Amino acid sequence: MKRVYVNEQWCLGCHLCEYFCAFANSGQSDMARALKDAVICPRIKVEEHDGISFAVNCRHCTEPLCVKSCIAGALSVKDGLIVIDQDKCVGCFSCIMSCPFGALMPSDTGVMQKCELCTSNSAGKPACVQGCPNRAIVFEER
Amino acid sequence: MKYVIIGNSIASVGCIEGIRKTDRDGSITVIGEEPYRTYCRPLISYLLMGRTTEEKMAYRDERFYSDNNVTCITGKKAIKVDPKQKLVTMEDGSSVPYDKLLVATGSRPFVPPMVGMDRIRKKFSFMTLDDAKTLEQSLTRHSRVLIVGAGLIGLKCAEGILDRVKSITVVDLAPRILPSILDETGSELVRKWLEDRGLVFHLADSVAEFLDDTALLKSGTVVPYDVVVLAVGVRPNTELLKEAGAEVGKGIKIDDRCATTIPDIYAAGDCTESHDITIDQDRILALLPNAFMQGECAGSNMAGQEALFDKAIPMNAIGFFGLHVITAGSYIGDDRLYQSRNGYKRLFIQDGLLKGYILVGDTVSRAGIYTSLIRNKTPLEDIDFELICASPQLMAFARKDRAAKLGGVQ
Ligand SMILES: Cc1cc2nc3c(=O)[nH]c(=O)nc-3n(C[C@H](O)[C@H](O)[C@H](O)COP(=O)(O)OP(=O)(O)OC[C@H]3O[C@@H](n4cnc5c(N)ncnc54)[C@H](O)[C@@H]3O)c2cc1C
Ligand code: SF4
Ligand code: SF4
Figure 1 (tube, each protein chain N blue to C red):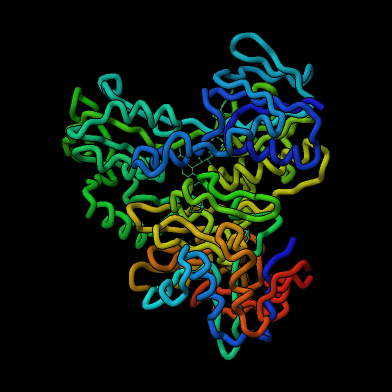
Figure 2: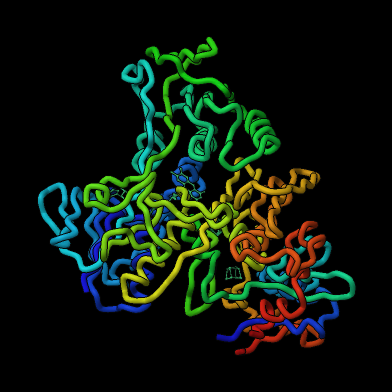
């Protein structure tokens, strides 16, 4: 399955992936209007320290601990993709306790959100990858 | 191949999924005492709070049993397992033969005898969907609820009903709340948070006697009540296998393949003892993730695979009115305490390994990175210790480990 992979040495720490993610999942059509003055809550997060940076989002694990730990049956595997049914999520944080990558976070409504590789929005393919100016994240089969 | 599963809850679903990964053809029969398809037991408090519905509480979608070709016998209790004839007998006398059996019978409330119990007119446990439904029916705006037990189940029940009753009083013999998962600082903090929302606690105290609508506590305090919820503790349902001759301690004994001491009989979930790798001892870990993963492991092995579940640790994520607590592992060795603006973090380190943590309030994000260090017994000398103590982050791992984690490089 195609996943988002990180080429750490190319990451500029520009955080554009975070903005593209937030925009892709905002449901709006105008990026400036969607993001201007907004506190964004993206599903990909850039870690930075000592001149190194890289973006982290869901790995779509083959043994997804988040799915196995969810007390609401809100997380599931759909053709290899790990998806969340936000309608079922009760915001218990069990998935945060379990994900070894720190890839889930509460959305602005309190229920969890996670990267679904832009399959549930209108971006078509991962917006973070499309927005990265330096190919520090790529969407491919490895 | 005939697979039979006793119990129709989380471990049972894990087992079905484990079996069907390799065996699409064998017949699977599930026997469940509760008259429902598998629902999310931990959500019964959220149901009372209005945060979910009975429909949304289903653990898997409505096609689950048909997609997996499972015969489901609900509303019936298994009363006997005969390992010689490989037969499970039900209370109505009917029986089901098996080649491979999973016992996933969970646990039931433990109710210590208390004086005057028979005088309580509205008395409930809080373990099942039916418990939640009958409790809900008996509550009014004027109800004064007395909860016996300040553990996870008692307090989740309190959260679930606080908005719809007049008052909630919680009594516990222990001097502090949630003693199984929190240190004293955490217990204090959560207790104050709950008191600010209206809960009244009588700790280091117990009910001496129930009268018709008041409870007399040992301390002399008199607590008026209309409804009593008993949430003192739970006991694993081990009787079926004990009578069949399996080794049973506090829970059913299983190995790391989730096999019991009787050939072709497996067990998983709250009815078993798990091997807690943080202390290298067997103990009961009545937790949903554990139940699922044990069930899945048992299912794989029942279908002829060689699966191991050898990473059991205690871990809890629990929240009350927006205050979140995540804890894992054991609180042993040296500890490091970090205060934060709205909470704190405590890490426990022994023999160069992270053994446990307590995260309360604003320190909970990305907790799973800590959990993974405990589960995988990652030597702390291999990672940047100061960075990982500061916050859970992948930056703390060596570049090659990051490449494996994020770049798919093996
Ligand atoms: C209020 C509440 C909140 C909780 N919150 C959390 C939480 O936040 N996080 C967490 O990790 N865990 C939580 N738990 C614990 C979690 O629900 C359990 O760990 C989990 O349900 C265990 O699953 P299981 O399959 O082992 O057994 P159970 O869910 O206990 O189910 C066992 C089933 O077997 C059936 N059964 C028993 N004996 C027989 C028989 N002889 N014949 C037929 N059927 C039988 C029972 O009727 C029952 O339906 C909570 C529990 C409660 C009650
Ligand atoms: S959320 Fe975490 S555990 Fe779940 S699939 Fe993604 S990376 Fe894996
Ligand atoms: S927060 Fe939501 S998705 Fe995460 S474990 Fe809890 S119910 Fe499941």
